[in-house]
Image 1: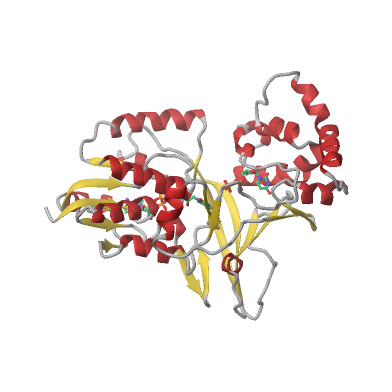
Image 2 (image 1 turned 90 degrees about the vertical axis):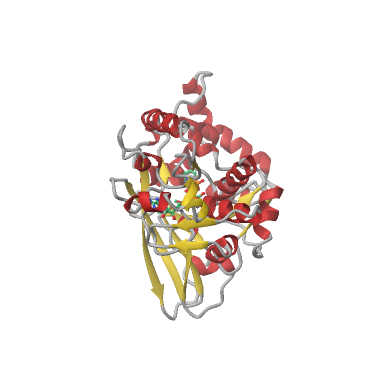
Length: 369
Ligand code: FAD
Ligand code: UDP
């Protein structure tokens, strides 16, 4: 055996594992089917701007161990995510806070805002009659009331998920803070920022001197690759590992239309603008330079379109409904019987993990082994 570990996938789970195993003197070979490292956090430089090729990635965590760990490789900047919503030309700050309530209703104090929200949600609260909200629509209406639901939630959510708000679970909307202070920070976490120089630099630093083979699909060379190492860390789709024997797990997928706007130094004045009306076909526009406070003479923007996933598309968001959760449990039972394969990360655990959670889970896993 030439290597102690074969690591399939160079996203955060693979890269963190490679770093920690190397620290313990283990020899790792990383492979990725894509032509680059980094998985979905990959950034590519265009005209001096680090473009988030697979969608906007904002690092946030309250876990000091994870924050110190990532900061030991590269510096993080002070970027704080403050998206703006565009509803038919009207602009609102997100998440829902005093700025949003002022823009929506002209209310100026927390007491006025509270009274307005109470009035806005009264009907929905009455309709529930004391029971818990059963779906996203009921949850949103009883949280912030009808105006915000109609202008900022309903259409965006239906575009993003391709399903009616009444057919979606309530927990999706609970991720968003509702605040009676003037604070546009999208996250509640203690630490937040973007790695200076882009995520690719961070992943590169984690992988260090480990050998990497790109454009290499594990399943096209499985026997040969398995023969090279004692153990495998697999971060690809779990259903693919078992050749879809119980059927396909489903995902939501996203496609990006990226444009270089030569000579435009500032297109929208913010990294993220959500389009919350039903007619605009994309969900949001990302202007990448603002993640790093760029002053370049040009700019790069990406329009994000959410679509139903078909086998073969990039798997982005796991759909954690009953059908998929039951199917995943069957694959997980198979994975639990493997002695020499460790399954980790978003695709192998079929879990909508944020970056800090993937890193934390790889750290825990490597400690265990
Ligand atoms: P991945 O990054 O998917 O890495 C898996 C790797 O395995 C890939 O490179 C893939 O090519 C490779 N692979 C798969 N199968 C094979 C095979 N058969 N052979 C060889 N290689 C293979 N998180 C945040 O914290 N903040 C955000 O703002 C945020 N925004 C996001 C926006 C979008 C649009 C998406 C989709 C995700 C976002 N996330 C965000 C989540 C974040 O992307 C993930 O937490 C993280 O990238 C997961 O890392 P991973 O290593 O588990 O998986
Ligand atoms: N959401 C919304 N309007 C917005 C932004 C978000 O209604 O302008 C809803 C939408 O349903 C989304 C959920 O809030 O799925 C969570 O938003 P978040 O930005 O956390 O979603 P992500 O893209 O990170 O999954």
